[in-house]
Length: 166
Image (cartoon, rainbow, N blue to C red):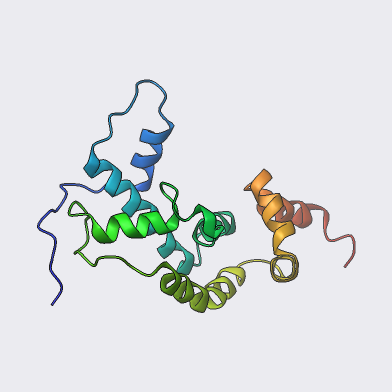
């Protein structure tokens, strides 16, 4: 039987609260060890949004880039592997102690679900978007990196002026 953590935070910060803390430049933030563990945990929560069809594609690409980053980055602070280690091993973790987790096993599970998750997400978009993501994902990702609203702007533009090549 897995041991449960006796540490239960009063409130786990949501995405908006974390964004406000991280973006605020007014005063330096004092980070406790507990805060840092929670930040690692919060970053890992982003993986769960891959299965949510309403999560914007730009966010999904961002999360996938983080999860599947180059192996030489695995030891860096706040890398996917570092987050798994901190959250799995810290006594301050909001989850029960599970020890070291094999990052490749987790990556394999994500790979296994990825096609279905992306297919469901892409159903919301016109055919040209689905085709572009499937056949030219780097091109789509580059546009979304420059402008996260790129797909929405293109869809709106096509609705107004129509597809010139249809």
